[in-house]
Image (cartoon, rainbow, N blue to C red):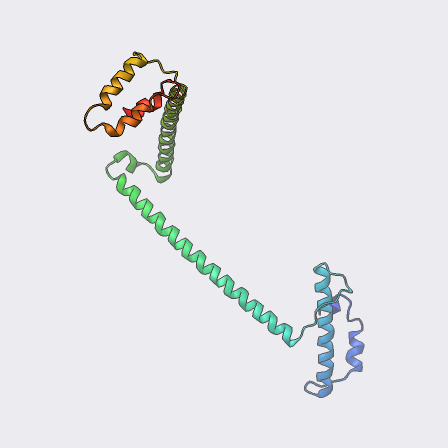
Length: 217
């Protein structure tokens, strides 16, 4: 009927009058197969046009092998879709259970708060979000202050180390007094092992090495 409406089967009455066939006969079966083939060709041509293919483009013929491949491909797609649906069902079930647990925990936490029990869920969650954000900002300020203190401490340590390495540290005693004290210190019984360390307090030019002195102490 679609082909007749589109003018593809003009003169169908003449065809019926010329080809006199009886249902069930060999001539009728041959005519029916020819008609089916023609209809399929027209439908394939229309499918090519709707898919953007050129009218004269070659289309893979429909064979038993091709049909078997299409069936196998369809089966694989069905299996994949079933697997995806199963995964989605599991994820939804897990999210539902976790949501239920969270709501149960919230209800348990707020059992002793009459004001919270009088609020609806949306308003309660809004206040909860405000509280969480406030705590986050407070913690952020604390971390910033701690970072500022740590940075200042690092600057003090770096400055102190630079002074010690360059022997710029001012001591309230003379080098002679320090040498005399170290000699008396290492001369005591049991202090033989620190004698070499005491000698390293002064370098080859007699300059005080403050870091070595602190290590000795």
